[in-house]
Length: 322
Image 1 (spheres, rainbow, N blue to C red):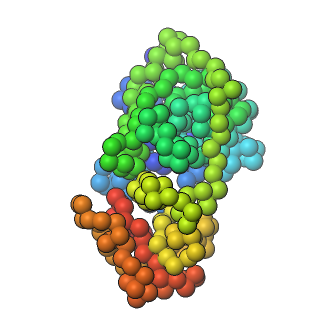
Image 2: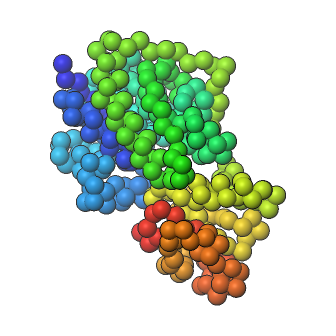
Image 3: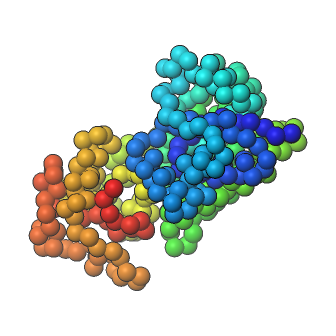
């Protein structure tokens, strides 16, 4: 029997992969709720032209379901009524940033599930991939987990896991694509069997649980770090998907800094992007040769509002202002 789902998540390739696999299995999408920033929405619209299969907007046009931005559900008095009005009998979470309240979960019962990019119960919370990069468990223990939603973040019983490991070239962008493909496979396989009653979810072991909510400074490079740790962070954390904060090489004390996640910070990022030195790393080119030295940075246009010369760290993604 075809199911009808309300999907809550971010406008990201992971959510697009879930939507595509769900509709390919003969099911319907009643609506897509998101709480993504404008940068993620713009990126998704660009993907609709370049690779429509990884765009939520393209899927919405193809299958004619509404896409809307919602406030924090716990502070939205009409959340339960709006969810019930969609006529959905399944709730699917895909990188949704807010906790789903009990009054919404009661509508769907055990048919409320979520995708989490970590091997639960380890690395619950909003920063699982960064936490796995910092402790290097991403090399052997990464993956996507499908679990039942309950009133706590990433706490419900586990339906299935799909292992995903970082490739040998440490391409974090490729890792995010692999996560999206893993979510699509779980949607097409394990989720359909779970809804049919063929899979019994397994409760999580709370004794192994860890929570990953990291402060911004946990990603910084500091003088006391070893050369191996600095090299690891530059090859992984400096390569970030579009829509997230840009990294800068500046003459700040910590060596690498970034503007805060705020409207003023994003505006400063855009101004810096217009003034920065545009360089791309060629295959095999040493990182130091791309980044330049202090004399090269000193001649760069100043970064406003910090008034320091800045240079975007080389990475996988096109270096252009949005």
